[in-house]
Image (tube, rainbow over all chains, first blue to last red; front, top):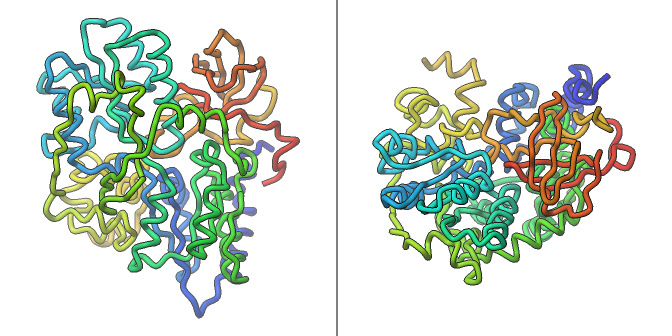
Length: 370
Length: 86
């Protein structure tokens, strides 16, 4: 039997679900946040919520980078693309994220030179091949993605490519978890920690969360059984009054993470004093900009950035969904004005966004409301 | 042939079509050929790609990596030293 078959084996899954039901004390409620968009997607895709007891609620966290990017930063990027010298490059996920000026894809349709890339290294190659163009990479992502951008900047420096710059929107996961715990109305009991972010940063950084806030963190893999096992581990901790960091995804995650990746991130990037997150507001020390030593590859230094402050679409309630205060269908635009085909909020853009995942995979209640 | 069952780590493949950034997606692959700071890698479906391996200067053919956005971000331990049963 292949490993993935075991991780999706109905009997093993039912056994884990039964253990969760046994552990969930009926007299209390459990609110667990899965931080990562990949976990949100897996929960909806495999219908895991339906296996859980009523008093165990999964809250969908801020781990989808395009979902937490405020509209103003999208517009800042699009303003860069209006410079006739600039070719703006972005991951496919970013292309449909709406700002006030529209999405990158819509601006491209109007004639702006905006191109989709799979890797920041592809953007660097584009700059190498087009020395007459200023190629800007719209960098976004948590610590899984940041090393790729850092390596690309180091390669640009080594290769002496001067027409390549980075518009950095990289963010760090730990400050976001702290901000969520600092919002008392969210009322979380524990976290399912992100899997591949943790291959880079390791599990050790979550220990401060467990210690200071008294909330357990279990770093999880992405298969159905991974997630259910993680919930078993969290419930055992909560029932025993423990708040510790545990690694369920042991086959990929270590305590120390990838030191080489951490080193290149630290070499190229430094913390911004503050950065705005959609739904969470401004969070100190939560995002990264290029160090002054790499200013030559910093789009914000080379071109200046407008610093657009945009208001969210009037009736959209992305912020409440992001903070776990509303479920996606409780937003009045969900499935009506805001759909994956015509997203008004970023949560409906990425397939890992809570609204898109809910729209694509959750059937019963949505059909009933319609 | 991959030296291990790559699905042990994750079922993702190089043609993953979701949001790889938001999905925190990293694809397990094994190294077919090493060329300086690049390596030709293959996923569990036999799909190949060239990826940046700057973080692993001592890379060997057969090493198993996690790849994210065209860059190897982690070298995986063999299953014998990791968790063997789910």
